[in-house]
Image (cartoon, rainbow, N blue to C red; front, side, top):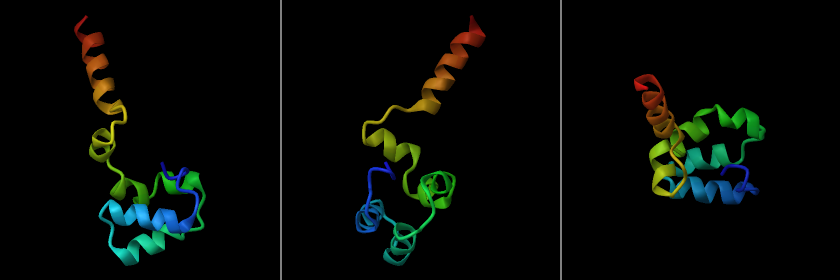
Length: 75
């Protein structure tokens, strides 16, 4: 998702839509860190949570992993 928001202005606008305060969205949206560094930072972990991804229709990997794990353990 972060990579799709190519321009800093788009990043700031979308972070604001996700409920991030304006000053923080501006800081995060204009960050010069690469995608790899942003992936593990608070920028994405606080703004794009698993719940928000599920609401947007994305596949819930942690829940699916747990279901498959339980099936495998229980035989």
